[in-house]
Image (tube, rainbow, N blue to C red):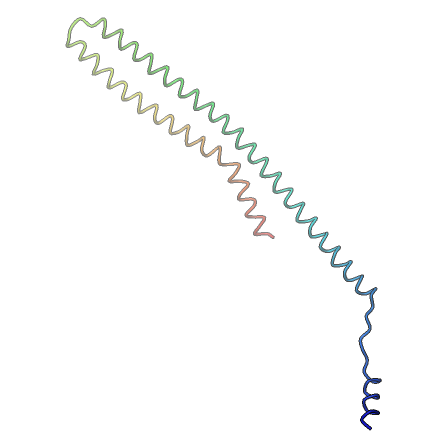
Amino acid sequence: MSKTKTAETIENVEFPSFDASKATDQIRAFAEKGVEQSKEAYVKLKTGAEETQKALESTFETAKTVSSDLSLKTIAALRANAEAGFSHLEALIGAKSLSEVVELQTAFLRKHVETTVEQAKDFQTVASKAAEDVSKPIKTAFEKAVQNIKAA
C-alpha cells in the first residue's frame, strides 16, 4: 500500500513550469531600464562636466584680467615711489643747510608713509575684488551643483 500511496502522491504533485519567453521579456525590460538609467546618468555627468569647464575657463580668464590689473597697479606704485625718491634726492642735493635737510627728510618720510598707506588700501581693495571675481564662477557652479543634488 505504501507503494501505491507514494505513486499517487508523486502523480498529484505539480512542478511549476518555466516559461522562457516571460523570463526573456523580464531580462530585456531590466536591461532596457538599466540602459536608460545609464544614458540619463551620462547626460547629467556630461552637463556637469561642461558647466564645470565653463566655470573654470571663466575663472582663469578673470584671474588673468585681475592679475594684469594688479601688475599695472604695482608698476604704477613703484613708478610713483621711484619718482618721489628721485625728487627727494634732488631736493636734498639743493639743500643749503642741515636744518633744511632735516626738514626735507621729515616731510619726505611723512609723505612716504601717507603714500604707502594709500597704496596699501588700494592694493587691498583691488585684491579683495580680485578674490571675489575669481571665486564667483566656481562658487556659482558649486551652488548650482548642490541645488541639483538636492533636487535629485
